Image (cartoon, rainbow, N blue to C red; front, side, top):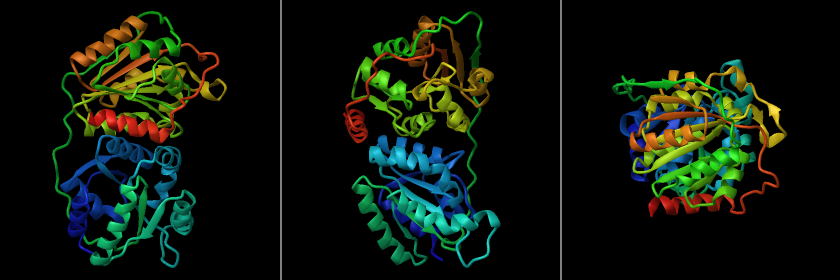
Length: 377
């Protein structure tokens, strides 16, 4: 067992000061340290934590994710289709519940057997974290070398690795007193996605980052206007607002617009609550809803049964607005720019996409690199 505070101090010395994750009893002391001494974002699932950390990295922070190994399965999609193709380096700590030869709950038995194999299968370098502080310091240096090469690195943590550290109670986030919700009051004009993205792009400025969700949203934004401040998500469906959260928290000098789709948002609706809790005023979340999985053949989603404006409002968004047409969309964006606060704009769009739609010719890691240049320019 090692002293958690000393281990955490070494992490801070190496520049790791942004954390996100989901609690685990094996990691509770490291989690408590990160909450006490660093910036910690409490995610609602492990995949969201990966995406939040990825957003923080884009913003210039060295990020750490913490999770129980049962939740590693929730993180597989962003680890393989976000972290890998974009070459985003994150440092991970995953507990080893169900370690073979040690009694544990039945739900951990299989995961205890396959956790190392999962990491290896995902081509993620990893090691068992030593309980000896001096040896663990050497391991951190090795891990940091991988991070500096834009590669992820994970530690598998056994029970009893960290000594106890108390959680310092901090004030909870304050619920905004003045919140505003505008619901549907008239018929929708239902523009197509390309028209919506063209309008959004026409309002482009040098202080705003545009994050486009998986599928045809990113592809159409690329055709509207390819720019260094565009980020085109591939894979990792549902993670765009999590990336937006991590980026907006770490780069408060920039405005962040997350362009989401109904199928994607439905997949990871828990992040609405995370966004609402941390409530970065420089984050604008725009949902384009056509009731279909357009990128996979137009199969229906269950979005007609969901009131997204009410949901975002209930989750803590300071402003949640139903947008009926392009004019109201422009007004909503301009209003957010003039009076920044966590805002959700809902736009109903037509089914279908631009004919002969191509794909971005810039590779994912090149998108990341030029966005970093933009952010640091």
